[in-house]
View (cartoon, rainbow, N blue to C red):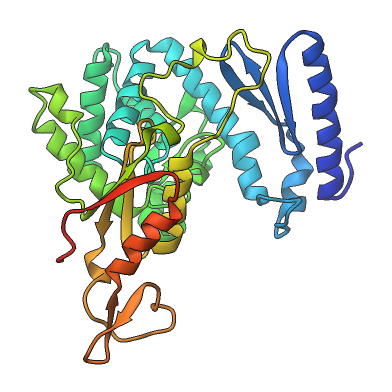
Length: 367
């Protein structure tokens, strides 16, 4: 019987993870225990196992602490919604051989344009799933190129503010859910900016935090531009850095990523557990976003993070009246107003990325 408190459940799950780790190691399978999950290394890949205890979701509500690092809603996404949706996406990839490569094309396109910090992987996977599921038998994309072009067309035309995206895996969306979205505009504020509903994800929990409205607008403009250059796919996958105000160059040897990495070739015969979630560039961009997210956009390629592009938000520049909440990185002007202290910001960018940042290139700060 599972305990009635969160800490007790976590301890019991950790005991299960330890017992399972010992069993796996007796079969010469490397595993690593965390209080919230068990990582299993096999053939160069790492699989993460979590136990799902239904009562834990309610017990975690409003109880965030060191022992309880995520809420009940976040736990439901990790242990119920995401595995369920992933199983449907896996089935879809078996039905349509072009689906997996189309997803890879889209993720590569998003990352090449340095939107890794704003467009989550699950958004890409669900949008591509919609393209394949909504097509008729005679118009289903047969190649990844055709599927990718159709995805770009969809992204360039779909209005996320007016419509939800309904993905009805195996027609499992119940009539009550479909009826819920008939009055979508009347309750628009209660849904995410990118509302994607599917079985077990009826309220779009998977895209609750991102992408945001501004990210979707950027994605739409990029899709429109890419469609106008489809005569050469190389140009579609070429980033445009002309809009950057600052480029932060990173030390490639410290990013933990290589564009030529093949996971199946690493650690295949090693008894040591591979390093996982070592992404200094991602952590650096997240820290920059927490500190200066109100003033700047920080763009980077998650899969080959050689630079971080900084775009100043025009609404946050210029002289403004002093406020306590808006005093971050501000300097007083002669007229008693305040403006962004750009020198201090550049110094912080360098200091926060000490050991990771190679140099900072200033392109245009006169905005």
